[in-house]
Image (cartoon, rainbow, N blue to C red):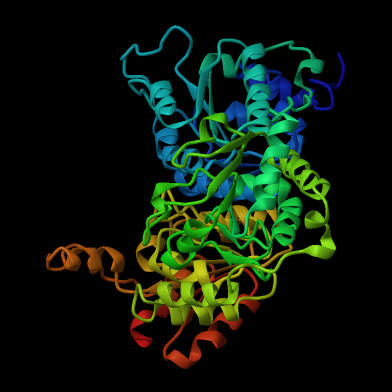
Length: 563
């Protein structure tokens, strides 16, 4: 008998196999087939919590070279995987146990669905033939698959090792050639542990299927529409990332100001003189889009939830580029709809613009029809008016961040009313948030995922005190993973935005003013270091100290000092 046996490049030492067989488990099982398939696509980190039922996923991680990141709650695992995906371009992978583990993670699945992000969730399920048996099994859940199906874009329960491997391949096919959204794969517990002799050839990565392509006549018609416009503008979402270089050149040729969605922030560097920023929530930015006589919308669902201050009602002709046909006219009718990957459609559109003649030559780039600097200033003034002192504090925090920092946040007032405008992103996924799903507790675990994906760049989470309490336990995850991570907790005494909502409705503040822990002590308790801002003038100094400190650090910023 050989000393090692396994599938392809992965092997199981015979001594380990003998111990596993003695426990009734053959390590050459479906769990191995699934994890080796994932590894072939480049997945080198997974997020989750080991549980009684999912151990045959975990068994194989060390030898496959896959890093296991153990969160302190499955929701945090999903948020970390979400941010990891945004930084790597690969789908984040979450491993949960059955029942409560999966249900704990579903908020992150909802986030990935709403924000159009690639996520794969693996979970064991009830053994084959025991679905819905209601006999009191460990982690028994009425309809686990149904729960996932209600939230994820795709949810499948497999019945064989071949089906499990095929489900992984299908997930990558969809996520690489269509709109990225979460996929749930359920492997029955008995199948997960079952020995398999599936062929090594079936586990290897496959080529991505081709994305849809618009016909050249439609691209040429769109180019003519844009070239003829006197007041062109661009709205870019996260779906514009793969075509960002061509998009910038198109903006320059047309003199078109660029507004992005929150998820599209940084698709064109925000230092570029044509970029207004991720300001759809502000009337000053929306007015530019409404007044344009030609509006190019790239990779954005035009989310209703982002338009908080002004009605989005473009008066000009609209062109939309999207990989998802269902989004071509969703929320905004378009005269021209080009269905395809922006990485292929935008270069073709650029070529068509250049082919029209002098108007498309780089030496004849147009000046913008508005003063972008004036619109930026109006946006900041408008944003800073939402919360007393929030804009001023955000401006100082943004200025104090280290060069090249990746910023994470969540649905905290300091994030959407402050950092969103004052932090200028130079590339995509440098400001990681979830503006439409708008949950609390995302920022800290997202910072963990971003740092694991991009260890050489500084990562800073800016969040509110109420939001941080949703995921404060993940400070221990960051410490355990030996991450250099800075958390800036801006403390307004609870749920400040909701308190304002109550006041606007004539409701006396109720259940929104929260007692606070000693935040620097909390950081120390999680093996980090805490920094207290005790006067307004100390803010930048404390942030600099925290960033320079190795490991996990937390800066407590009481808003009362700045009001």
